[in-house]
Length: 459
Ligand SMILES: *Cc1c(COP(=O)(O)O)cnc(C)c1O
Image (cartoon, rainbow, N blue to C red; front, side, top):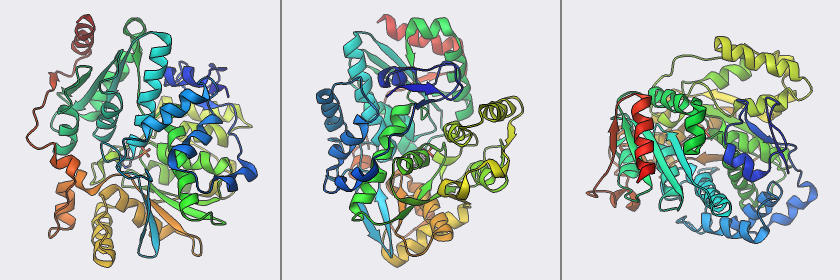
């Protein structure tokens, strides 16, 4: 399988080359030349364990890692999960929840970042080279990337977060990691400032080349690929139904784009319910055809407080497959003015199964209460956004599975608002209590950041 850029000026990359490049060097996103179809073989997946399933799917996309090595990478990546099923499906009321929070940092990002960390390690060993990973986080990505890369050889990890603006739990998950290759950096500023710093440093091509900077953000193809696996896992755990639907709490369009890929591979995923909080650019797009950047609103589902969904360009690429000019016009228009429009008639029939809904904070809290009172199950706020959207947009008669993207104990202050009578906890989070922490404090200033990265590399 070869990979190419949505923008057309990068092509013919192998999987490992695509992973190392991250964002395509022409500014686009990397996609496989074609999405492989499982066809009738999909019925043969019954009874496979999660790592076996992942291996079967990855093989279709990866031909530059020998199968034995790939198998080892996969087994290692999913051995750090506390549930033997990795992503167990549970019944809640009449519907289902797929728990994606059994990894080391209790959010779904572990599923992709454990794998990506091991792929990086494999590539670096093979090429006998080193890498400096630079990332910006509003919370969950940073800790999952750190957990995926801590203690690995030939790779330093620099994660910037806005000082005082992540939750206390999220900050501890980053700053209590003492491995010498991990550097948590508190920036004086907002998450947007961290992202601007990241872009500024990546734009300095000579610095990027010299320090071999790499990225772990959600545009990395390995993350999309790793996330397709659990949609197949739903199918198996449901007993291979004729059709099913999922509700996905969405920010950067990464998780739900993986659902789309799984559907294109042949999974009978009839409806993809895209749930946003009040940052509803994607909801508005599917309704009106207008994709327009707005101010970011701060909500009780902070991992979804995103306006520009970085994976969305991949979907547009498939929508506009037969019209490269229109694709380019859309991208140009959005980059120059922050707004672009698609003719609703250019969207595929039934929008490829996508239906959308935007959920308020009040509804999120109500959904947490309602679910707890009826079933005893405790939702995290992101998951609650998905359930609320699923409730509104579901199709009757086929199973509905809502994706639980984080464990509720990661968001104690919101939970205490929704369920004051309940104490949510998790042993992983309790174990952070009282541990020593280490963080570097830097001003919102790219020369200072570059200097710090250089100093670490001279040690
Ligand atoms: C990152 C994240 C999301 C959003 O996922 P996308 O792939 O960006 O759409 C939802 N919930 C939680 C808990 C997250 O950490």
